[in-house]
Each structure stands twice: as C-alpha cells, then as structure tokens.
Image (cartoon, rainbow, N blue to C red; front, side, top):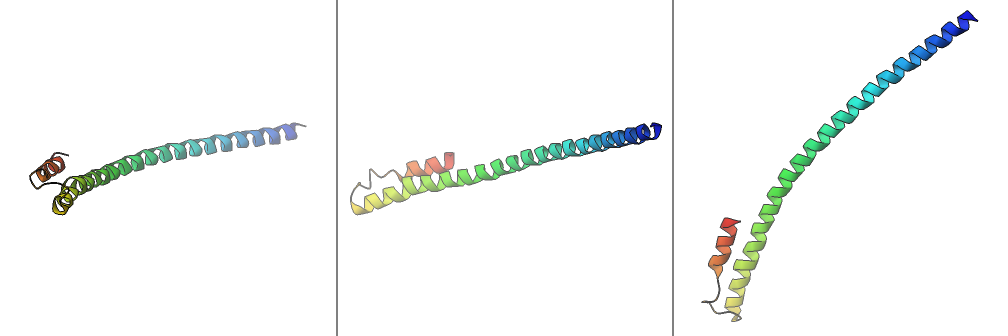
Length: 94
C-alpha cells in the first residue's frame, strides 16, 4: 500500500509540475500575442492615417479644382466665379 501512495503522490506531483509549466508557457504566449497585436495595430493606424490624408488631398483636388474647371469650361460657371484658389488653399492647409 505504501508503494501505491508513493507512486500516486509522484504522479500527482508530476501532474502539478506539468500543469504549472504549461500554465506559465500559455500566459507568456498570451502576453507576447497581446504585445504583437498592439504593435501591429499601431503600425496599421500609422499607415492608414497616411492613406487617409492622401485620399483627402485627392478628393479635395478633384472636387475643388477639376470639377470647377470643368464647370467653367462647359459654361455652367463663369471663370470669375470659379474659385480654384480655394481648392489649392484647402489642399495646402489640410
């Protein structure tokens, strides 16, 4: 009977050691994964903000300069009323 308790206590001890070891490994992996996710989120926001700024410049250029020039050429607006300079100011300030 003593031999059985020794073996069972060794198995319990081994199981607890393995459980503890795997728990540490799992928590370390979760921490590393969280750090990498935060870093990738920051990189994505940086790159996306640059793309959004470029998209704003393109939309402003298209709306304020090209559309106004087409309207003035087609006679829908007079050249004096066409405010291309306002579009240029919007691009340089934005």
